[in-house]
Length: 123
Image 1 (cartoon, rainbow, N blue to C red):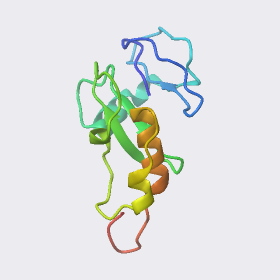
Image 2 (tube, rainbow, N blue to C red):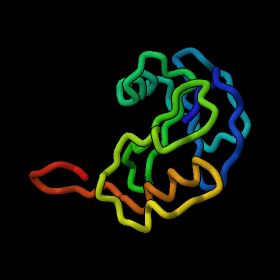
Image 3 (tube, rainbow, N blue to C red):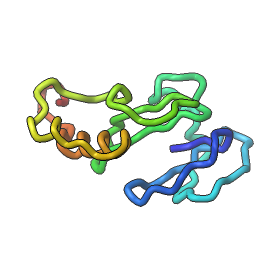
């Protein structure tokens, strides 16, 4: 997810990029796969846990779970950006060392999917 007020995004074939514009904002950027309805701004701000949503980036896994959040102006992704993790990660998930922080996050999200537990806690 991106905001039109943020710096231009670099295209990444591993991701689908969704532009979320504040109500009344009609700007756009190159490299955007989808533009969300402006009415979604408040909902995403609530989910992201911030009133300053502009420039925030969110990573959602293949199953639709929000997994990582990057603050506006942050230089790159790191493991600290993970919102949902487990201390009992598979050993091989911790030994995967992609070249960049984003690659490491994607590998960890793939290795540690969110598991629904009926009547219990997720993860």
